[in-house]
Length: 262
Ligand SMILES: NC(=O)c1ccc[n+]([C@@H]2O[C@H](COP(=O)([O-])OP(=O)(O)OC[C@H]3O[C@@H](n4cnc5c(N)ncnc54)[C@H](OP(=O)(O)O)[C@@H]3O)[C@@H](O)[C@H]2O)c1
Image 1 (cartoon, rainbow, N blue to C red):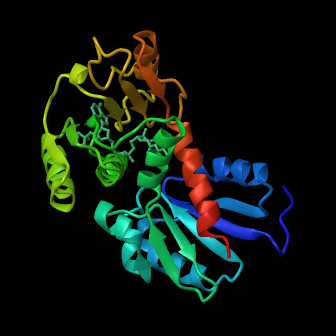
Image 2: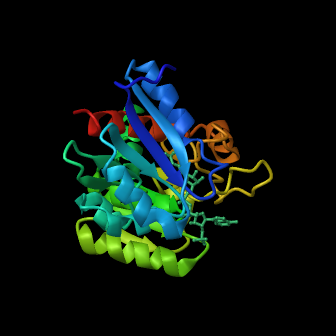
């Protein structure tokens, strides 16, 4: 990759920094579409976030920056504007720097997730969805599913209070969708989504029991690495449709490319 004065520069702000792979994924994606864009991870401690963001405002060849753990929520107070989607989810994962130096935060997880399902011809409208997990990504997918017209969403999470709070927030905003929290029999759902981190390690237990889930159902696991989690392998072996997390990430890259086009 040749970085010149014409290259659009972007960052990914994180702490710790060692685990960050988003910058490599973004660089590979932008190179593959021939976009002259380079992304560097930047190690930023929470206490320095405001000052770092203020400096980025002054960097005229910076087009935006991704934010990840632990900055997804705290970054909001340092921005000029956030999109309605980011406000609903309560977190930002990408910030666009306009030509005037205004910083606009968005959360691309929800749209990336719904776009990945659409790419696989998986309908969400009027479908019954079981979501496991109510963390940062789970908040985004739940709002995304409701926005896409899911008829019913059940949210299961180890911490039940978080699942109930998320269900209440989604229900308040999308009254046409029936949203609840608690355990459920996976066999009665059209779409089952894992948004927990269970499945990243080879010896992780399955995030939920999918025995009996077969043809006619779709199982989505938003984990990117491994590409085929144990849950997905089990779903595919049982004849269900299995969709991994990479297409969700790729769809977000396409959104970033559009977001920073100026
Ligand atoms: N494909 C994509 O584009 C994309 C985008 C964002 C995230 N992700 C992936 O999504 C996953 C979650 O990310 P996140 O940002 O939402 O993380 P997070 O905010 O830390 O949430 C983690 C979720 O996993 C649950 N969990 C963790 N360990 C568990 C265990 N041992 N047993 C049961 N539940 C457990 C948590 O439950 P509690 O609430 O009970 O702790 C919570 O629901 C990660 O694998 C991440 O890489 C993918």
